[in-house]
Length: 255
Image (cartoon, rainbow, N blue to C red; front, side, top):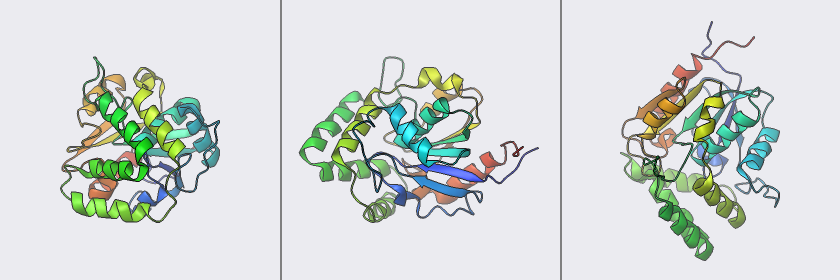
């Protein structure tokens, strides 16, 4: 038996972002679940403590703010944190939606669909010199190639401006997580249903990651949203909502 309705949905934004990026995500269009828009450490109104210095501690911090059980949605870096939460507390994460996310963000000999490590290194160096300019460049990269790049960039800027800017230490650590973390080998340990959504024009997480995910996590669903870049929930909200509702309909009904 299946249900098209879920009770709780945890939503994690990406690097340098905050919970305002979900402002236009209508709960009814996304399946009717209660939305828990949790901010990553040091982003928006979330505090950043020296002890929050690993991916797993970021996952723990998000788990502390999350309901006892929920489907978790993670966008970009938020997807990496959502994967870590599912590994950390499998009974609490009943489903995963990985939105333009990847288990490894940088290229390797056996992982070509990813950013060159030099790109992240450049971001790291620029961040120390001029955090605001680095964030602006990253925003532009997120929409590059999208059919509605200009409108999406304007929307992102407006939403981010409604909350405090991220703390520099949190931004620096976030870049380190994007550069260093590799969860490919742990994907088979995740047993909950999973949907991976990619954008066909994404300049940060290539859509070809879908092929690799299908090998590493055979039970997962993958979908590529045509014309979208790194923020399909903003540039292609109808297509994103449709894919999510279809995924929710496959989830087992609550006991």
